[in-house]
Length: 298
Image 1 (cartoon, rainbow, N blue to C red):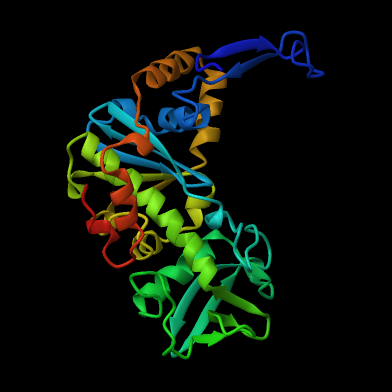
Image 2: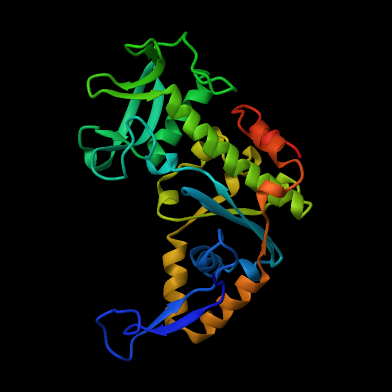
């Protein structure tokens, strides 16, 4: 309906606050690149960066901006809620009892649980690390199928394969769970590669990968690479900026200069619609593969 900045009285919107209180709405780029991403770009100073920066906000909608010396292109992909613990058989939010780190050694799964409590489920970082470790241990094939010849694999009462994390607590990662992560991986990686093509850049020409959001701070770069969400050559270039949307919103609220800056950023960002990008469907299909997704080409 609108993409411009809006300033309105809090009273006008029904908030029981002082008559002097104003509500500021950060400008958007498009329907799918909203004020939260503009705020992230403001916090990360993408428009003034002298190098090539890939900014990622990973959630149900995976938004990203590729900035090359201030020239910015953005896209949004339907990553799905798997990395937030949704649509996962043992999924849960990142709170006490959630498995946040997983490693495989000696034919067993080793789990790190938030607050050291007994494991109750998997949060996003836990499911991502399970898949990353599964690919590394070759119990997840390049097509995403679970292999049968591993002590980490058993079958449920219906004969469906699953990865055993904690049998006593009933924690398993199913074939369906892997498919959810696979769809997320395909969406995010294909978005990254499409932006690189739009700016006529190769993967290795990206100088920095900045991951924003609360979710990002729980992620090991090796898991992002191992699960194939980010091209392998960028592993050493990944950094975390924390809740960039919140930081940018505070900057916008407290500084008139930053408000003007945010408006300029929103104006400069070019939106790329993935669904109509040439060759996107074929690229997305290639990016679903675990072992070679980072090598996909348009």
